[in-house]
Image 1 (tube, rainbow, N blue to C red):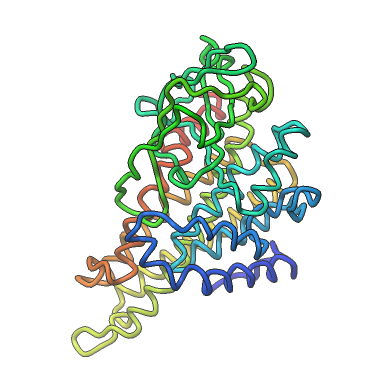
Image 2 (spheres, rainbow, N blue to C red; image 1 turned 180 degrees about the vertical axis):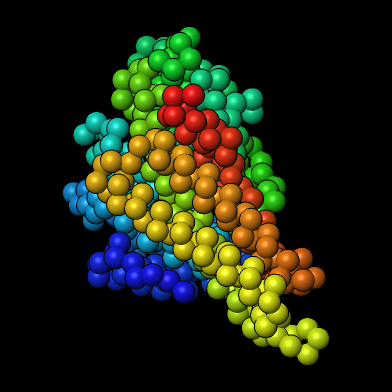
Length: 383
């Protein structure tokens, strides 16, 4: 059951086919190995660049395709979210949706010439480091310091929960350059081969096992002032500039994930029998699936409208926050209900629904917790 969607044109659908073929060629054969290793091969980024699904928003002069249309990001995110073996591709989507915009939009021509060709080729893997052991959604609490020392900054502190952290070569790092909670924040690009920089352990998460998530440590790391993104003290504004797209990306993927879970669950209850009948023939099963399918369809229409607004430059921070908390909470609920329909087999990790259950939970936390998203929406009501 689905209404006709008119969000995408033939170019987007062709791009979707490229992503689907890439997943079959590179993700499916390696999914189990990546999950066991807790990270993907670095070569995946080069393969993605060669296929045209990494860094396509980067200008052509630096090796990208110059595609400044978020609908390409959205359709790629949907394809990856729906596919049951594409967990390891999360680092590619993260690069496109969240990190590359910092390098494309906040850099000087000199910085672009220095970094963008390697990023577009998949040779330089990127990450963004905001969260600290004592600071999550409250960016004003960032304590990692950057003290000016001649033509460089000395950086000290640590970050945690950093996606792409084990593989990253360039890390956009939120640092404190002054005492003001917001105007005292700046963004520095820290290169992973810098003296004093080290990666902590690859964190053992409940889900998303194929995506590396790391601790990062900075001990008197000397970072050239030429690696500053924007002006000193503009870091908070830079972070806020990119958060609506990050949250919309999470929301769009959450709806697609719910759709994929529902498709797989419908197939399961059609084949599985109990008391001599397909599980799907019981009224409770039909009612459960009817509710979830309808709710997901409503969210799909909602997110499509939000994507249109973002493409037009009209998506507000409040709208992005609302989309993020609504769709991710719905995803968690959908996966929980679908696991129940699988019975005892739903608790077995050999069935995809068990891993869907593990993977879904983080969506209400990363990119800003549900509680923070509600606070953003609530404040917009004048409360």
